[in-house]
Amino acid sequence: MELHKQAVDQVSRRVKAFDKAGTSYRMYHGSTNSTRRISLDPKKVVDTSALNHVIQVDTEKNVALVEPNVPMDSLVEATLKYGLVPPVVPEFPGITVGGSYSGTAGESSSFKHGFFDRTINWVEFVLADGTITKASPRERSDLFYGAVGACGTLGVTTLFELQLQPTGRYVEVTYLPVYSPGEATMLLETCARDDHFDFLDGILFARKSGVIIVGRITDKCRYITQRFSRRGDPWFYLHAQEKVANIRTAPPGASATTSSTSSMPISNDTTEIVPLQDYLFRYDRGAFWMGSYTFSMFWLPTSRYTRYLLDQWLHTRPMYTAMHHSGHAERFIIQDLIMPSNTAEQTIEWVDDHLGIYPLWLCPIKGSSKALMHNPTPRTIADIENGEPTSKQTSNDLFINIGVWGSGPGYDDTAAAYDRFVADNRAIEQKVKLLGGFKWIYAHMYYTEEEFWEGYDKKAYDELRKKYGAEKLPTVFEKIKRPDERMKRTSETRGALKMLLGFNHLFTAKK
Image (cartoon, rainbow, N blue to C red; front, top):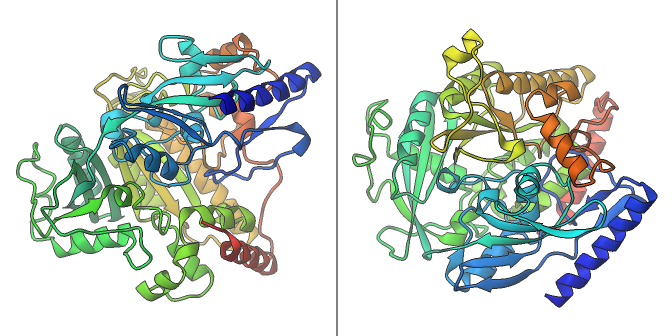
């Protein structure tokens, strides 16, 4: 802990100097899983990149002391030595503990545990005046919940106590076919009520084709073993698509019309055993399915052979590096939409009608979050249509994250296409707001400031900033807003140059 204290003292001194000078500053973490453009003035930066250690794993209390820049693969590796794992592990190995708290994070265990922040006992902060303090659900709870998803605009996080739970070595994974958005959301709700499942998510490959994936932690190998981390292994989404295509023997609607999970088809055809770490980071290779765009971008054929040859560059870490250097995040819609389960089907159908983007990721998330930036107001369709007042969420609410990641129709390197890209993103934001949901703010934001604060409690947020002396820091909107300059691609030449730049960084980035 002594080295940690020295590092935090250094951060505190840097923050105090900025506070005394009345200078606003940004944090440098060493890495990012945001898709937004990030530019930093080296003279106005607090560097926390050295805070990247798992300090302690307590096997009696089942907790771990973890610094904010510890990535998920290092965290899991450290805790698995003791047969323990965090209840919620975000799917990309490079996502950090601090980013999962100050941003937003959830995964296929979130239907049981909620967002990642729900698994944190307390957080150590350096406040905007350099004061070192702690916050938890019982002590300075307003700071603890207010800083969730606030992008570091209330202070600098420097240490976390994370909950851990016992785990087995494998996950027993079962693939269940669905044939419509309605069936998919209904089956997710059914499975979320089953205490036997440890993991739950889904993929829609098209409007009438999808799969719901359930998992149980186990130490037994009762079925064939499948891996996803080696270069010769399949990408998970392609494997799931192939798996569900081979088991579609039930009539359409059969899988989702049941109100219980007792009749689900669990057999050698539908179920397999996946090593735990392979399961937790199953979407790393190919970055879900975004890696498939790499092949078309460089006019390469897509096959198992080319995926094998290019494997080391098609993990999430090098792909994020290439994305930021190439600017290609601005030609793909990359949005996560947290929707009340009763409006998720309508949201999916709207995405299908207006964007036609597939696959879509579906991840159910337990409600009852107290976080200021995680407070959507679920409503029935009738309430929305009739303009009824919004209702507060309860512990029984289930939200469904809809991952909309892909290239929309006609997104090329012209100014007109960029205008359409912006218009499509703004349409998504307005639809999400209308249907009682909210967006994860790691991605591009196209709201005006007034539109953004219509969805959040600005008064409470401003009061927190005043209470904890953070008014000199950038606001959350200032950190996530789209740059003012118009980033239109006005020629094929510029687009080609960006492509080549991204290609260079793709092949020089390290995993």
